[in-house]
Length: 150
Image 1: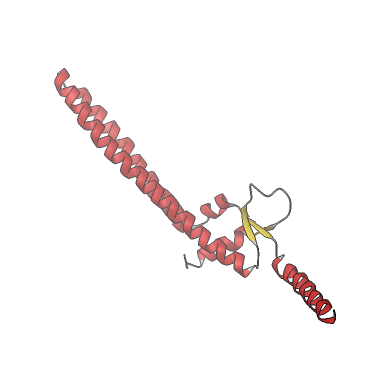
Image 2: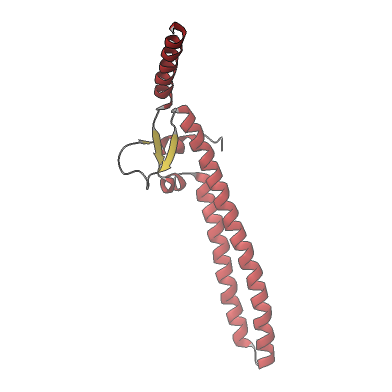
């Protein structure tokens, strides 16, 4: 009986201290703000936007060329060739965009995880999910990203 009370007391102490150690809290970030203040993200967005503008300019140039064609057969062949070229360019653009978005997300996520560990938080949520409470770590993540590790 004495051993049983000792075990129960020990388990209660472990549970009490264990809960306090794990009850660090929840942090949240403003992902948009981080993205707007992260030089890698800014550069990636510029690169994607430049490719998008190239795609638009391609279509403007092709439209001008189309207007110079004089026969229906030339127009049809031109349309077919342009459609194939445009599709390939559009796929390359979309691949670039997805790759850059994934790189940005992964780098922000890595920095956020580091801040979570440093601040001894249990989880990090988006600021859109938090209504009241939590710890805003947005500026800490921005600072970590600016330090250049990611």
